[in-house]
Length: 169
Image 1 (cartoon, rainbow, N blue to C red):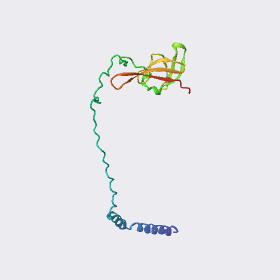
Image 2 (image 1 turned 120 degrees about the horizontal axis):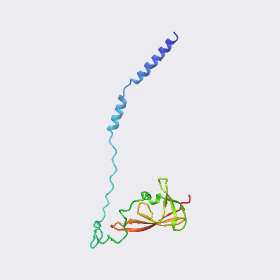
Image 3 (image 1 turned 30 degrees about the horizontal axis):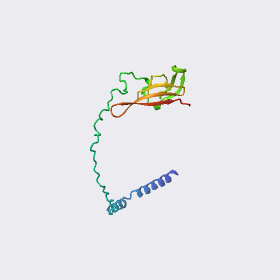
Image 4 (image 1 turned 90 degrees about the vertical axis):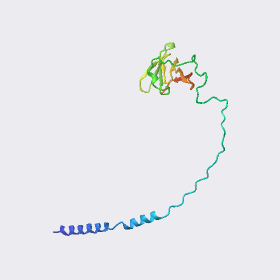
């Protein structure tokens, strides 16, 4: 029997709490309507447009930039060999390769190259590496000399010297 007054007190408290929630949202709706009815603040005026003086472009006597340059395709210049079989190290950019050592001495010296695939490759003179048709022209104890073929942008090719130094880590 002692539990009945507690249950009754709990029931009365719940009824009062629910009665407080039954109040409508009319005051909230009125406030929202009043805020929406207020006039919007004026916008800042746009800044005045600046006018620039017209400049006349005259290209009389100049080459059309959209046409191929005359005489740029020199058949006697260096060219990559399209029939040459690509070597494994040509799949990686030159700056991603690391020289980690050498084997041997003199003209038979081999360089050890660590590629991004974590495989160490042996390289000698006339091997190719890098993505610009880089041919190894010298192998020293501390560096590899490379000659790359790069496009000159006009249909021809230029030789560019590069090197890969021994990584002392």
